Length: 190
Image 1 (cartoon, rainbow, N blue to C red):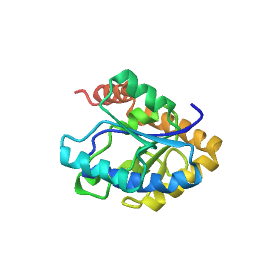
Image 2: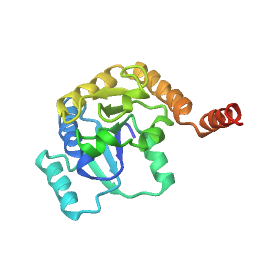
Image 3: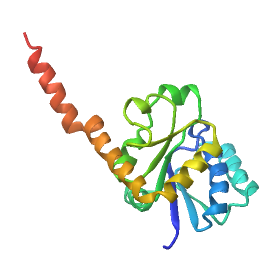
Image 4: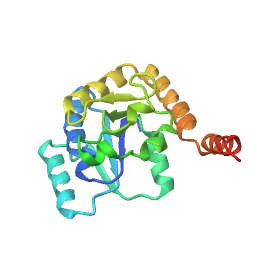
């Protein structure tokens, strides 16, 4: 309460760009010390989890970053809904460039600002500054600058979040996509 809330949810794999997010957050709290970063999920590798914990300690962010682990769907929805900004900041990796982050659709349904990295086919569905905030991958400075921009222009950022929800419903909504498939089948029956 009374704090800005950043949220990342997902696996803690190398592809997820967590180290860049932590570094970006270290810059963010210099200007916005009232900001808290909640990270849900975890890595199946305890070695990687220890690297994440050590990175947080290296930047002296233990009191600002909460690693809450896996949470149930109601808790996840609460974190995502309460977030001021959500993150899909994958690294520039073969996995990220050939996969699609399904959590992006879940994030979009909150109508909150989302920062994503320019990897894979995200920009086939969303437009930077209109329906999503897009930054270059592996670039904590770019992420920090985008966080600052969003905080400094939050009402405008909420409009972008609203557009992300509209884009997700149009492009990923199962009702709309089912109608398209039915129409295609009906038009192509023998």
